[in-house]
Length: 144
Ligand SMILES: Nc1nc2c([nH]c(=O)n2[C@H]2C[C@H](O)[C@@H](COP(=O)(O)OP(=O)(O)OP(=O)(O)O)O2)c(=O)[nH]1
Image 1 (cartoon, helix red, strand yellow):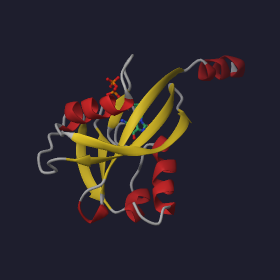
Image 2: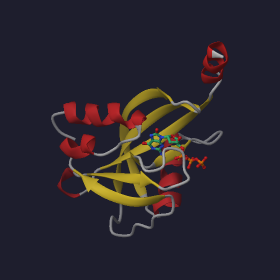
Image 3: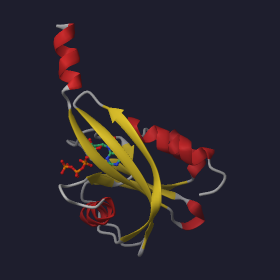
């Protein structure tokens, strides 16, 4: 039984996922809470999503942010890569600093809540486990 579950874990599907670290007024960062019925429902994340075949990561971010939140973002630069193994899937999470063009026009299609949060308060939220290293790394920087 143990061998079977270990095998199942090793054979879990892998995905490349992008995450946008969107910096707004007062250097606050946008986080969004995953809606019910999604994997990790109720957890807060940096918006983004799975990279499609032949898609550039920057294009994925722009597409996902438009689909999920109805916003146009400019991708500024890459921040960090981390791997995380969930029970059902492995993800390689690549985060990028982004800027939103019109912060007031949000439309929540995949999330039930968004918040602008100071870097030092990010870890007070129930973040998706893969996002905790990102929040920690942001806290370790002197400025964002
Ligand atoms: N977008 C995003 N996903 C994250 C983060 N942290 C984290 O563990 N994930 C996980 C949750 C999901 O299992 C996976 C991304 O899938 P998704 O459901 O958001 O992406 P998607 O819209 O392209 O996928 P789908 O629902 O259409 O299948 O990565 C994060 O900060 N942002």
